[in-house]
Image 1 (cartoon, helix red, strand yellow):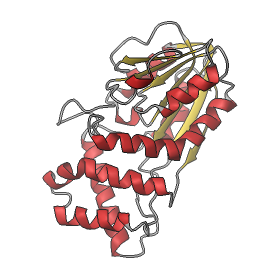
Image 2 (cartoon, rainbow, N blue to C red):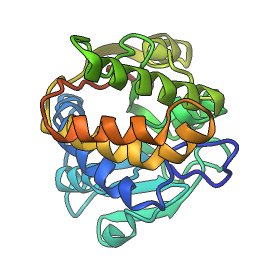
Image 3 (cartoon, rainbow, N blue to C red):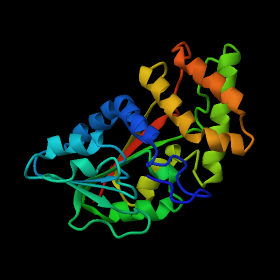
Length: 267
């Protein structure tokens, strides 16, 4: 999702070139987890899916493969810069604000959002609208980060390079929190799905360490937010340059915040 106001909203603007790099890294890191759950829920031929806050193309394309020509995938975001090229055929790409706009019509067998709601100011309303969009028996699959559970970029803080990395990650979390992100949101998903009236609620969590994609993701993220880190006094340009050089060596064991996946079925 994109940041249309420099003082609030999503910190990581989809209009920047680094956004595409981040989407590719997320796909490498998390698509196997997402589609393991999608397949377990039995999403297949002829079904209708709503991908909320799609960002990149990998999830809409993967869902389209599963539902086939008789199905439909609606991929929405407030910024569709990176998904508009897959619009057509099975996939409909729509500009849409999940917390403000009515759900796409028709009812869905699957509604899915990954790393979206943690950034949405009115996440309770967004969740209500996603539940509303489910057909009876349809599944809601939410996957969101919980930086509070594992706040470190380098869990093995073994030297000054790792200490600097963790300090910059702390600055990133501060910028997110200042824009309304809930850094403990992921852990609440199972309860929230039960409170929304869904049945058969389950959840699990995953976070990678020492993946090449973690290195790519970190470099792209820091380049995107470096101006705000410096402006807020959270880091100097010299520290950011030194950190990016450390990341480029590939010798830091970088991690992500845990991604918690939770799913439930509408009665």
